[in-house]
Length: 312
Image (cartoon, rainbow, N blue to C red; front, side, top):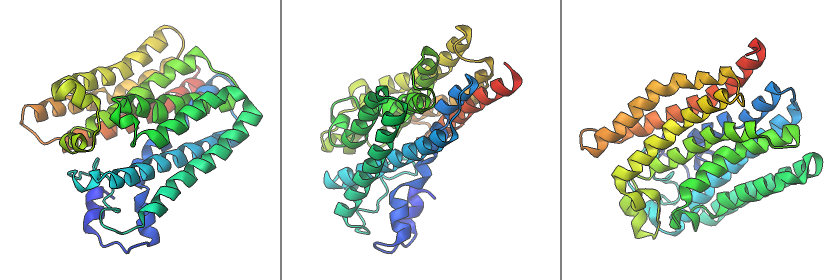
């Protein structure tokens, strides 16, 4: 289901399906592939708590729901969603501008998801250790304050990369092991770069609309050409972090399986460059970026599992 599909299919105001689509379920695949990475690292190192894995995974997905819903609400409140050009990958759900749900109820749905996450986080702090608290607090702050504040301060991409990237990996690892390690930190870099890149490229179609509501992002700061260079650097940095981790013996050889997505990453980079030259629309590159991110995160987990099973 795409956002374009949401715009053309009839939706009943307040219906369960409308609420479901408000969560933007097609984007929740990111948290689905992110959730097990930290546990896979811990399993490779000899520790796995299935209950902690499942509960933390649910917590990550709920946090992502909160991000999507609150973003939709705040973009409606600022009138941004009335000015954006909606694509399958950016521009909001279109549900609030269409008057299909009560905005205040959407806001409280997002807050409720964060409240449930707070309970889960408290449980883990009590059972696994309070060193988890800084990760939880940062993640919660990024989720709530991204749209109304952080996206206006040129740190939105960093917040996204941490909140739905590196911190997820580190938090999931901590609830398994009760500690942080340099191997987990290095493994978390790639997912962080990828999520930051997801936001960075999705900002291109909304550039002028974002200006009208006071947003300040890296596409504005660097210009489209500079932002495209940063996009390329972050994408290549993802693979470099894994190669470095293997070279330093902080990550197993099996994690090099992420290099299988390099051709897709190259195609995405070329698509962005072609768009900047006016030779191609951006949508294929946006889709290629999503596929690169999801497949690379998935292969990172698979790499740890293969390494454990094969003794790599």
